[in-house]
Image (cartoon, rainbow, N blue to C red):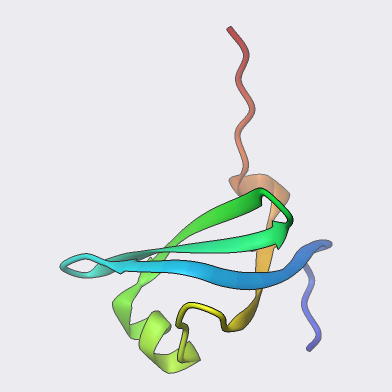
Length: 69
């Protein structure tokens, strides 16, 4: 796999919750550390994502926001 993003976290799918058009996919990237992504249901089907599937969480810096209290 070649990709321009530099933040690629290998993990295992622990949850796929489909909605009307969008799914929330949770990937455990380290013990107790879970990343959640919102993707289309079509993408879930195309990637054949299911609990226990290996997957990568790819984070592009332009799509991450940071906040503090």
